[in-house]
Image 1: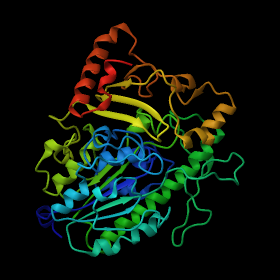
Image 2: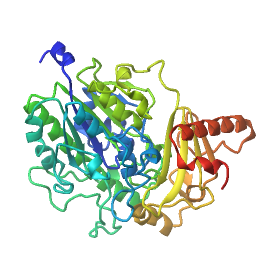
Image 3: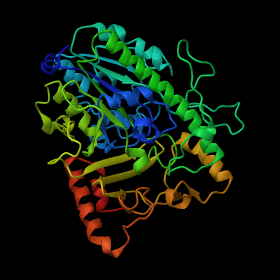
Length: 455
């Protein structure tokens, strides 16, 4: 297929969403220890975004934003959808698969769903969630029949890796095994990692428990990478790769304290790799500020269907993919987290300019609420058992007891340790960011707007 032919065709689109994969655990984002050769190869054949963010660091809430272009407090998915948590999109929300289907795309999904109600997400083809467990190679192979069908198509491919799972009872420290099977899946050899070979990111402490869990986490990521590699191979073998837009993201940061469920950088600054048949650049980066509200309008833009861009909170970034440092682009993004599990109420609203991040902890008089699996993790319980006063670069007390406002200069303080909000010389900046958040909340119909008036 010639470049000219590809440029004139409506592209197929594949959106790949992993579960809890932090950007610090990817080779192409600077980690020399983790094994992600297929994702690194995708980055070499595409563009890697360096300032890409989820809007809420919790699985279901983030996926609702990804598939609607609306912040989760607007679409109704305030937290988890499954079990007793029971959040879901409002009935008047129109989702990405519905819009693509109306526009002539065949739509399919495989892997994790974690959205509700299902009738608002009308995929033409799909395989029941959970059928493949953590076997991403087999899951990708199951998509071959769908890929062989008429074009254009949209495939929503969602791994359960590297989400936490059960405890590895055979290990003396009882780390989480992150879904790693006791034996390799057929045709897919597991890749265990030595605990002394992992890279400890700044938000974690270098303890035996953290190393034990990171080694399991890396193993799960390697299996995810092999599954994505098989999906790319299927596309190539079926002659569909050249005319397929591939987007790789994670729903939120790594399932460790200081990351997932927080709106600190490890929780919300995520990988975004795009391989587009309609762009020239290969192996480059783009530092434009984007977030997951942008995904639905961007995908619709590629499909030629973004005829009502004002309906979304995000904005198509198709036009900046070929620009390493785009001009005339946005200067700030917003984030909004409220629930994880139904018992994890800790609402936060954020404005992020790249240089500064401002966090409003709405219920700041509450202790920070832990997700159950993060609280039970060997990493956190090991720190408690050993009486650690700090976890990573932040004190345990600062992590659990947060002030009403947090302001960080990310250029001078990338680990978000020195809160500037209470310093008199930053009062005008705090006031300015507070006003920006109020406008954002008004524009997105945020029910928590009234908290400025009381509580």
